[in-house]
Length: 164
Image 1 (cartoon, rainbow, N blue to C red):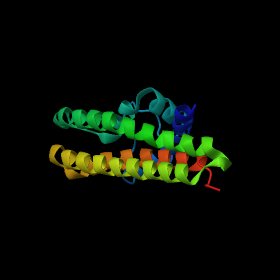
Image 2: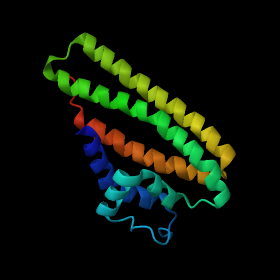
Image 3: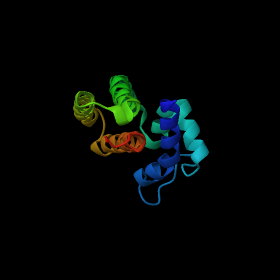
């Protein structure tokens, strides 16, 4: 299952990504699983990405009220974009050696369109975050999300064969 494979890939690389997101010398919040164990991150991503984000955001009570609606909206709008990207990967894989010029053009256009849609979503979310949170915390969330998305993109790229 591509989604399970994506989660495994994210879980394998996320400890490093999250470690890079923490300032030098910073530690994970009390009660949080160690960020350097693959199993704890795998479990967190698969079972509750939201909790993983919460542990790394260090929000005040007031910031929490403003942040989570933006987060939920972003995740809801991101889901269909990720589905489009995943479908494009499957189209490339399924076409294999027999991909036609027309299919190559269609799939490539779909990938570029989905990427553009994701960029627009990221920009609109950034504006909302910057007005709802201190800029450093808004930037922190975008870093966390971008690291997760980068891992997703790497996972997809690894599975897509080059067009013959």
